[in-house]
Length: 266
Image 1 (cartoon, one colour):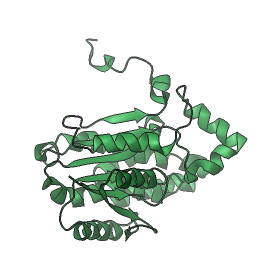
Image 2 (cartoon, one colour):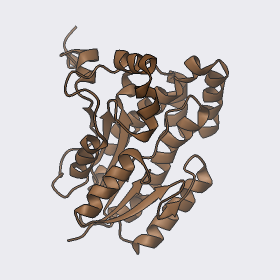
Image 3 (cartoon, one colour):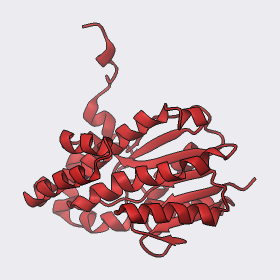
Image 4 (tube, helix red, strand yellow):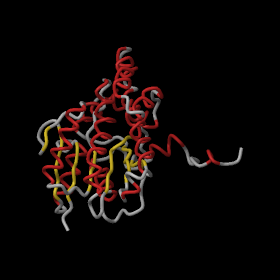
């Protein structure tokens, strides 16, 4: 049976690849992006998110089986937090009641291994508490200190998003409604957004220094899209609340083999 998917960020990068693979599989896809999508909307604003969600419900005829949130930016600007965190969580919250009516509802988002990098705890807490004005004000403060300091907005947005997925996944609204909710944390993905950086020797060295990928090096968007497709398929019945590091081994290289001792007797 054909399933109806809503894919944000569907016009480029991981989102475009995900949408293409779904269409090739015979699924119905409703794409959301700034331009070049079924629904053109600015997910950096509350109004844009609300309009996009309502348009998706209308276009779907009231039946949505899965949501895959790929929209995101990595610039050292406050808007990065608005798109990467609020542009994901508010869309998912708005579509959740419609999603819950599906016989096999699923949701997945794109995080990043940058969620392991230094971040702003204050900004994370403001985002998780739903205080967008406070979160964006903190982001603007970081950006005002210069591009290097402003970079913290990106890993902060992905840390907050990953925590939101883990927190929400086991609630009555998600697990209680039978909706697996997961995140895929990507390594260095070759997309139009990263091409310029990776083609510059200095940029390449910087990326590889912070994102070591011993398995197969930089990854094509298909490597992320394929995992997103499984997580949102009917085959996934019990995987939820996971931040899966699909990153060529960057997470293991940085964190090592022991991520369990936090609960060992001291």
